[in-house]
Length: 255
Image (tube, rainbow, N blue to C red; front, side, top):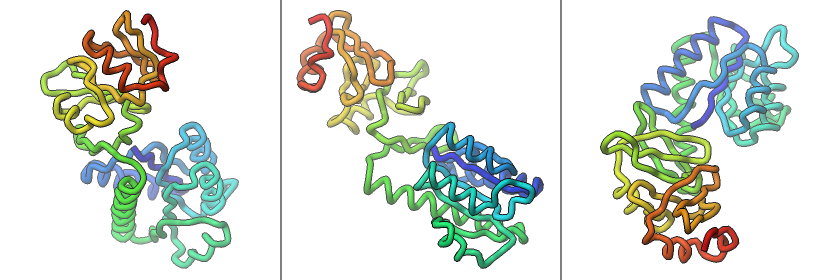
């Protein structure tokens, strides 16, 4: 999920941006979340430091009474998030040259004097970001996309630790490195989809073989790299040892 940050010194404009972004994310089902909305650039920097990941930043340029302006804030963000999306929401139209002077790559400039134009600009930026993310996913990593409530989540397959049957009928719980949620589905469908990388070790578990850290053959239990544990069926011992290969032989217990 892409975190969204807003830094705007005008409280009314800040509230309007936040509300419109919230509605667009909800309506379109974007895999995004508004993390922080503040008039203080230091708040934004601290939040990114605490949770360093690729994000979306809607920044005012003229931050009155603050220690830095929007361009200087952009520089600090770039040190922490080199691939983040910087969007300047400003009363000034012709400031593209400034991004070169500050060595910034801004996605867009949105003029905030007209509420309708500002909303159109925000909507367009979200569409462009979503397109770029889809293009990059196709080039770099395989992603598992699934609808959860009104949001479509995109989880890197290599970050999925395991799937397990949830407490409710026809629901599956996904355990990832940095996420956990349940959705409508079946382990059988997932097993067919991921048969080359995942192993159905138990009627309740479908695990990512690359995420296994340790096997306890006597207790028929495996320790996953995220610290969680999964059971495996008696008949899966041989398949597990064979599929995991030599990389884990030193971590096979109770032989």
